[in-house]
Image (tube, rainbow, N blue to C red):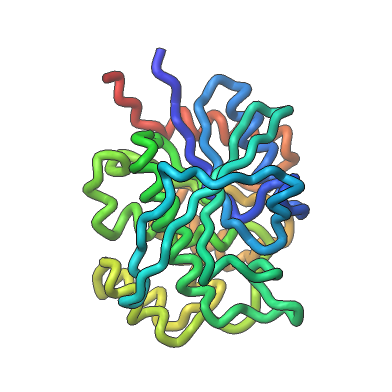
Length: 272
């Protein structure tokens, strides 16, 4: 029997970072793997990740590609570490320009980094290019955390939609109470237009606030999971209005069963 393949595009994973979001990034994939599915986990190699303590090492065969963001080359570096107790590997997307800083997505004052728009573009494309190199076709892509919010756009609205690794992939988006203030760089839309999409897509990114970024991610997703309390009601209402399947907030034990069933209902399995 062919196993369903689930790709997790996480913002954080425990024990590399500690938060409620990181716990979901760690324990949801484990529970799904224990139910017989094949999983792969990714996260950004944020500055808060201790490479020595967590025994990260570079995967040379996957590294070395240059990704062009706003007409500039940025080297893609792939690192990996193992969660021995769960028998899972975590792949880290790294780059000296974007991830070699002590803080993660926000600075010490809680403000967005000016280049966060390029960082999330690089992260999304880095994951997809690595999956291609791994020759691993995900049936479901589950995005966990706002830092992965561009993944649905890339898979559904750019050249990746015609790629045989992703053309049948279904996308699930988990929503958290992780809103930030302000907006991404004013030139974000100009940069994103170079990646693909149409006028209809770009309207979400004209004012790249948290709410607009997440609304766009909802539009390109097949199902939504309300992963914690306090999620903006506006986002849930937007998902319902756009006829997205929504798994409402519940205990983790309840949700992991619902999510596993969701994957089964969504996955397009290639028996070959």
